[in-house]
Length: 408
Image 1: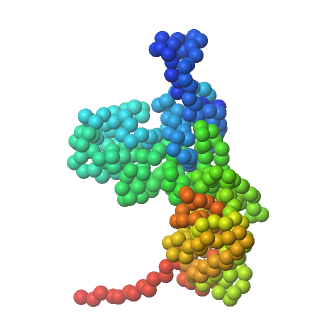
Image 2: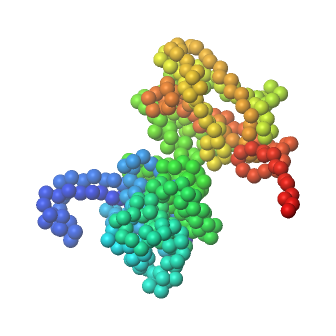
Image 3: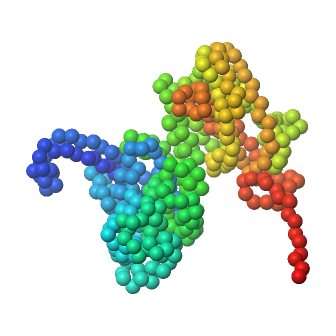
C-alpha cells in the first residue's frame, strides 16, 4: 500500500463578481467565477514507504501549493490526497507560531496541533530546546526572533517525534550552515529508520544526497518523474533553453539518460579522455595525470565562444567545474566552419567510482545570455584505486601523518 497517493489533484484560485456568488458556490449552487487561475492541475503520483522524493521546479511552478494541499493547510479544487501515516511538515517559516508567545509556549501549541498530549510534549521539551540551541531566547516572545531562530524552533518541534512522512519546504535554506548540517543529519537518521521524505529545494546537492527520486513541476503539471540526476539535468536544460533552442533527451547504452539543449551555433563534435600513457581510457587510477580533449565545431558566426565543463559523481553532484571565461581564454568572433580543440590536463584526484563530464558552450561566464550547447553525460569514466592507501570519500587528498609520543 502506498504511503501517500495524489490523484488528479488541482488547485484553482477564483474571483467572483460578488461574495454572494462565492457563498453560492460553497453550497453547490451554480455560480460562474469572473476569473479562474489554475496553479496546479492533473497531478498524479504515489510514494512508497521509505522513499525520499525531491520536488523541483521554477518559482511559480506550484511546489509550495502542492505541499500545502498534501498537508491539509489548503483545500484542493479537484482531486484527492490519500495518506497512510502521520505527517510532520515544515512549510512557511514560523507558520502557526504566535509572535506574542514564547518559543516554549509555541512548542506546546504546535505539538498540540500535531496531536500530542501535554505530557508527551513536556517529555520532549528538553530535547526540543537542546536541538534548537537558541539559549534564553526560548523563553522570549517569537517576535524577537530572527528568521534563523524561528526555523530552528520550527524544525526542532516538527522532528521531535519521528513521523511516517516528513515534508520540508525551502525553510531550511534560511538557517546558518551549522544548523543546516545538523538538520540534514536528523533527516538522514529518520530515513534510516524508515521515514519517507518529501522535500522542496533549489539546492541540487541536497536533492541528490537525500533523495532517490525527483519530480519536476512546470506550469502546474508534472513533466518529469525519475532519478534525481536525470530530472535535475532536464530541469537545468529547461532553464538554459532560449528562443529557437531545443531540449533533447537520449537514453545511452549504459541505461543513463543524457539531456542536451542549445541553439546550435556551436557544438561539441568529439570528447576523448587519455590516461597518463597517452592512451584512450575508460578507467583511470586515483591521482593519475590525465588529458581531456574536447573538439568544438562552429556552425554559425558568433561573437564569442566559452567552453565550460564539470566533472560529476554518479549522483550527479559536481566535483569540479570551471570555464574559459574564468581562465581568460575566450575565443573572439569564431566563424562558421572553424574547429577548436580544447586540451584540459589535470590529476584525477577523485575517490574510486564512476564519474561523468558535463560540457557547456556559451558566450560569457554562464548560459543565461546565450546557450549554444549544454550536454550532460558527454563522457563517462571510472576511477579505480591501484596504488594509494585505502581511503573513503570522493576526493583523494592523502595527508602526511606524523605521530609523536608525548612524555612527561
